[in-house]
Length: 220
Ligand SMILES: [Fe+2]
Image (cartoon, rainbow, N blue to C red):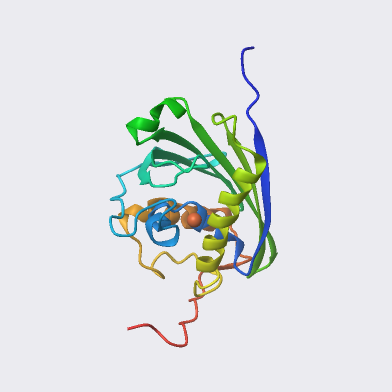
């Protein structure tokens, strides 16, 4: 009783020429915001220092405590916000976040409240080991003036940027040997995601015990 229906919007499908797990891992990674989504989800010149968050694992996958970032255009209102992401990886190719948003500009604060939530569910449908289709469901409990076109415009822009970066990742399949790629403290969720895939016995679309091939030309 008393629960208001929250508008939910479906965007995509977005075909990615990329591995489904790499696409999910990218979705779960807050460190790429200032670089991949500069001007939207982060500021390239002043990237956020990601706080030390926790990852827990249960029957329904992985869940994080809050990951806090500043976003100059953090949601469909086109306003700067302080955002806190609570991520979940529910299944290997299904993930979501519950983002708490607080308008950063005091002059615009009347357009929001402390209860503002922006939630997104992502599914990655593998077509083969290196191609997938991304679909999104977005639910927001604020901004009743926002139209489906407003939602779609921002989602399309953000996922075109994600697509461009994920399609360049090598090796194309996701390595489950945790030594295969450099991991930082801020990558904790990505690291736990790979560990979880390995525990689940996922082999399709991964490099498990076999070493991933080296890129033909290594930068630097
Ligand atoms: Fe992204």
